[in-house]
Length: 132
Image 1: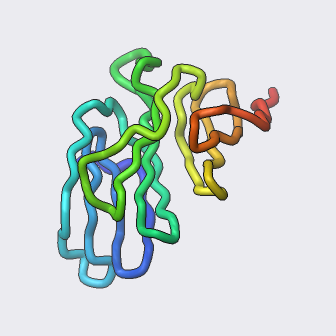
Image 2: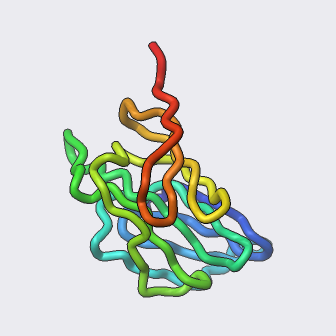
């Protein structure tokens, strides 16, 4: 396992791992499930909403350069596969951190985009660039 992002909700710990989402019992550490997201390249941060839907970013990092064609946010409905693509767009610029906000998300970027919002339909808004 090559863990990236983690999120605890209730008795479940979610962990992203390149192309897989793993769940574990948060009290005992016992493995529960693994969902493979074969179209993913570098799954990163994780968030879970009030309906136990799991969302994970794909930062597209591979080798010496990122792969913009894989920048995405995926969803596991009720924490189960198969994964659904919420948004896949090069304009996400290496999405890293993610937090569910209303119908969309607040996302941080490894790239120059900084912090921004993404609607449930993929519209990017309220961009706060990284300064410096």
